[in-house]
Image (cartoon, rainbow, N blue to C red; front, side, top):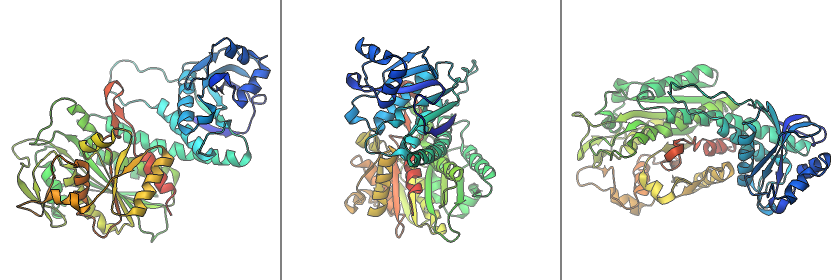
Length: 495
């Protein structure tokens, strides 16, 4: 869909559908009040008749308006004193869901002319692009039935007051479009079934990205023989029971200064996780196709960064394989040697994500990154702790932790800082190896992060546990594209 920021009032702009707001208690927005005069106080009468109350997300379509508009859509904006980005997002989402059911090929939203608390024109534009992408996204299903016809709506304008604000809104729309293109890739990969989205498929996706962005992205894919030569015994222990070959995918994006150290993104890419010999319960096991969302996030960020030509250097490392039970699978009690040389007693084969990540974190040292961020659907314990609202954020560097926390707030893709203290690491002690891969039931998300911390000494590191935020369950099951917005906000604002 085309997105534009325009400087126009309701009397000078023609559109198939004008979207204007009504606050609670029937208070008309500025644009709605202007439009009310053109319509002979029709909106005022509708308020008095109780046809519209201003409740947040409520909509009322006037299909045969007068003047410059074929249609007028009234949308509830809630309390004027509390109208912030979340309320703007919900109001616009409701409005566009209504508009796309009409024959409108273009629409103009005047909601963006209102004061949106604690934000600016840039984030209003970016939020608009995200809402448009959300309502436009279609799950890549394999149904044989006919596909629904695409909506008629092809263009959305947002009206902005002020030249400088319009410029900022256009920038926000541009960034938002790039970010959501990355989110769409992340969601698509997660939503595909595991018999299609295999480690080889992820590698092919990375190679396709490099072909699309030849001037900025390079990709190297390492096969099982090369992974073994690197002595990644921890990574290989996870794939030991699978017929699908593992892949180590290494991406480089060159957008910054030639000698500038890159920001490294490391993604967990378990394309299906049965738990291995420590097999999971059958209920909802199908959702373990989403256990590669960390890897999908890395690919999504690379796509978004290249689309926007961000002036940064990135390196991405994705360790991808399946975790399956078989006669060759790793057993509880087995001891493996990581690329770092440290030995690990595998007490639970369902704690496999950390086993692939630790070798990927060791490998990324070759690129001498200034910052390392790993992204993984790592622990159910993080879901218990934070639900699906926040990703868990663990870091050995206070400045990096604060930067990611603030990026999450700006992007409305929150991450909550959690501790990584030595007291928790004591739970990982083993009688037979340098460490165990699990530390017991208590503080499971923290001990998992403490395990990873043993492989990042000397590096500025953060770990995002996205087990609760990468996808939603239930009737609306599907990938969310998080935390691509958080990471992109961090990159856009990095120096």
